Length: 247
Image: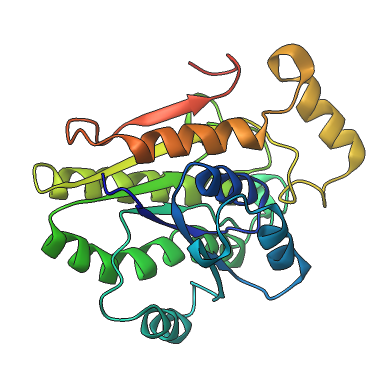
């Protein structure tokens, strides 16, 4: 790995993204963060940054919109080729029984979960192929392991679709210097859940071993561990981070 490797993080302003940005900076990485909205969370990324300021750049881009992705890539330049791409972005949850879920809800989750990954990764894979190395890491969820929770049908479907894309990527680029791996964390008390009723949040937390949320910083450290691995043998892996809730 290069002495100053570059990691591109989509969803950088979320709970895991903020933690990953901070610890990557501390570890000497150059970080390019992507956020969907320009709000005060971007300033908080810079405030928490532990590296030199010139090694962090945050861009605003809705990765589900092809024209915005093109604008982002133009801003990064034709020579930009990250060592690692990390996909963290996820759509807003809307919990309801499966018989009430209309197709528009499935489409919203697909557009928010897998479409950004495909639209950002595809052009950068071409650059990684030319350089002969690169890693793609995506965050799935413990919903893809064992029985999924009730009411999460659209979210679960989109995460399974992302899992399929990542496995396909791992197979097609095996032996070509590019790896693809995933992590599947259990429930974290991040912005993704905070619009849910407090009683539901309490029930979700109490269902976890030890009745404790999964720490976003632990997930971020696991991602950076994956990113730091140079062996091409480690590809197509999924790492559960669930405190024993799934194995």
